[in-house]
Image (cartoon, rainbow, N blue to C red; front, side, top):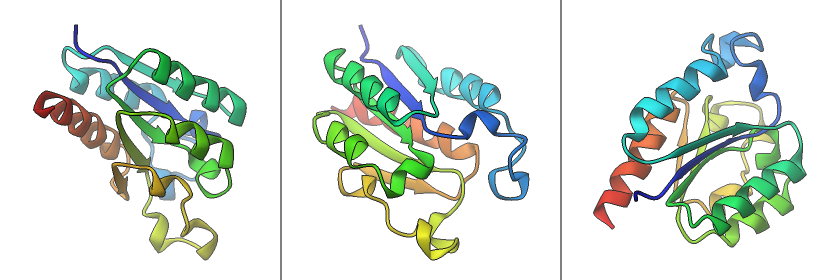
Length: 146
């Protein structure tokens, strides 16, 4: 059985399509989920969103316990301040893709330093909703190469 891919989304991403569309686009999280499921192919896909840091940590623990093949994570605002998310990701032995809809390096200085990047296999930023498809494809292809 192919290993699962977990796509985990942090705070405020449930508002995609409505929240600052000039930055984050008009695609909803439900539409992004459908795109990821199509891209995952035969790999089971777990797609989740939470506004709570502890819930995100619990889901990373689940991915560890399930021996998932990869995590695509858009930690949103937790990217820049969450030691618990960072520490949970350090325990994950699979592929980690850190994902951001906008290019965080073209934004205000507060968004320039990601804590998560230090443990990520790769970082994808600035591709909008397409970044989710690219990230899911990358995990799928990297699992096939392993």
